[in-house]
Image (cartoon, rainbow, N blue to C red; front, side, top):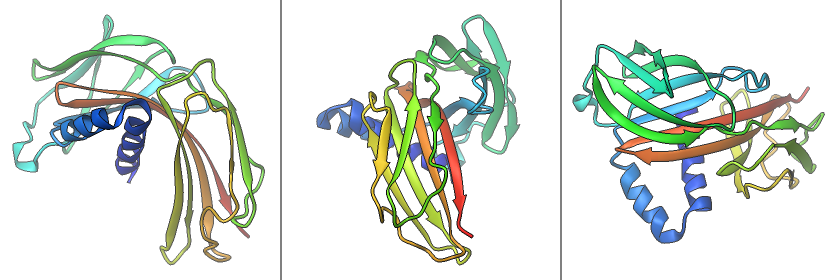
Length: 222
């Protein structure tokens, strides 16, 4: 579910930073992706630089190369990843908002070599409470603009009924008011979540690399 959400954000971000023709071209390229690398803070509120690394195979299941070892080198430091199925996990200490040259290597074979700026991490002030029948305003601070920002409001109840409101924001926005009734009232057992995601990304040699930070707040209704 998390991977699907990040890919949704990637699609929204493409529409913000590229023209229509370029978006179509990038969508064609995304269908040929072999790998995705997600880089996100271990603790999105801490700002301590520790990032989770998740490298996942995106190609056909039967074509998975099943490497014995994978590492990612950022600058002059290498981080080895641990395997679980077609996913590889690790951690790296990276400064938010810094441009890094990096290499992804599997079994000694270079998957890609590129440069990406890690996201500048937001500090957000979420509403103290939430009702789907009322407006909700969120404010946040950033030291500079990232490629894109995505706001997501989701609703779910115990029966599994879901609704959501997702919006790509201009990189310069520092506040937004969600309109009343943006999601349905799903009853007294419903819970609501508000997320703000910052993201930078690129595609290099059939690898999608995303650096992101998601801050969130949950609102169970009593």
